[in-house]
Length: 206
Image (cartoon, rainbow, N blue to C red):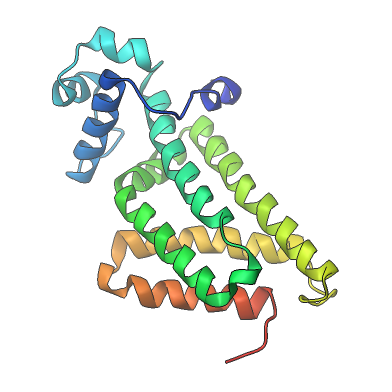
């Protein structure tokens, strides 16, 4: 089975020119309606304007390519999410979610490809599960700190609550960017923020 550790070690810094061309070409093809499974390496190379040998000098295979694209989606989403702190309140959380939605919209084709490939590739499935763990760990940490400060009830189970809002929230975000009108994004971000703030953080209000 492919090594998740090796794949996850691929750097997510600024790509080389050829690497960036391949990543951008793949996103264009996916956004144009192609499924990741049906995309061939030669088709990607032709779109990117690079040789097959160049492709394989930057990516082990197509799965490595997909995980590199996914890594950019997840890293950017986590950067936005983890920048929010409870002191910013529900308004700050709403703004953070709106930014995450915008990230997901830019990478919607990649998110669809992840869902597609995860149905038959355990490496991709395990990778995505591992990526969600950083959101889970961060949320549990924040909730426990809020409990210790007396702002969130001690009776809340941080682990169970986090599973609900992180897993459910990610699926809701995916559904929003793949099936809903972008004009509804602000309202969606507001409802998601209030669900977290009043439902999990247990803040009073309407």
